[in-house]
Image (cartoon, rainbow, N blue to C red; front, side, top):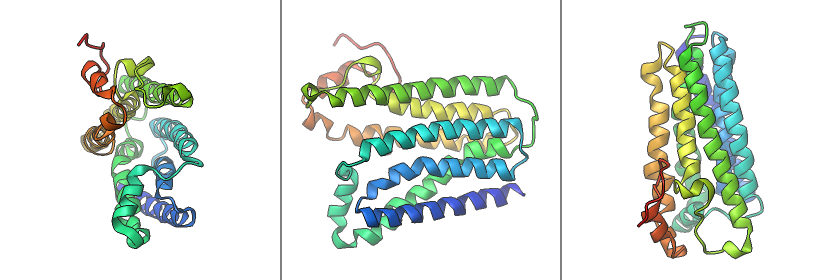
Length: 260
């Protein structure tokens, strides 16, 4: 199947998935269900590319890496949101649009995320659809290493934060322990590394020149849109100690805390 046809097919599958997610959100009354469907979309894109692609060892490797990352993310996000009120980001949108939100959310939440998801998934898809080189190279090995480091940061950071929040004595306090002592967002840093690792694998293929869109876009989103920027917009108002923590610890790339 031609490359363009495979990419169009994965886009159609992702659109269908997000329409299903939108219907589920209407039934449950919570737009944040989209967060659980986000990871599933990448699994669908990765295995669509592998099944319809040349079936190389690199293609299988990327499909497995994406699946491992996505399944962990789905489990974490679903566990975090289950039985909880709607995420305040979506609640603010719901309050803004009022009775029209049920329809507006289809375009501003679900279809928008479908488009972003597909663009981010281009990196792994292009790596899978390249017929050569047939054998794995040192770039694949380096990509796996970067991926593992990123996934470790992401998983351990999320686990440490969850344990911190489970302690009633930490209500209103700032998490500054473990990985959070070296970066204010170890989970976001790890997420970015995961995609740079997959890009490194794509570097071994003829499509490397287009695969850069995935890590660059996800890093920009994490830093400037839905990650660091959004979370830190008002966190100092909710946690008074965050201003000091912000001056001491790097926002993204890990580093030793300053003695300020």
